[in-house]
Image 1 (cartoon, one colour):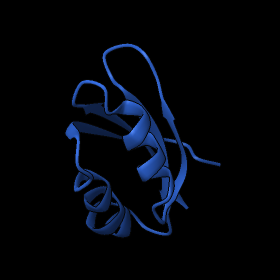
Image 2 (tube, one colour):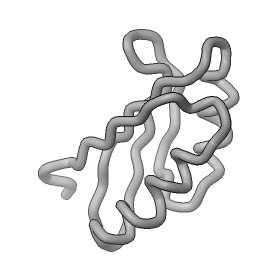
Image 3 (tube, one colour):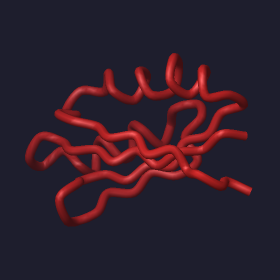
Length: 78
């Protein structure tokens, strides 16, 4: 399994709503709204890197209220 953290910035006041919407998507292992430079931290997983990049990441990026994302693949996801 390939896993990654996705760091998400949202519009002001949308972090909690975005985190809950992201949590309901296939491939999302966890979704939390946080404080700091990013508003939501998500852990995603898939059988392949291609599926992660072509399916899961775009489905998250289309959620209303997200302004920026940064995907960080986990180097050793045992």
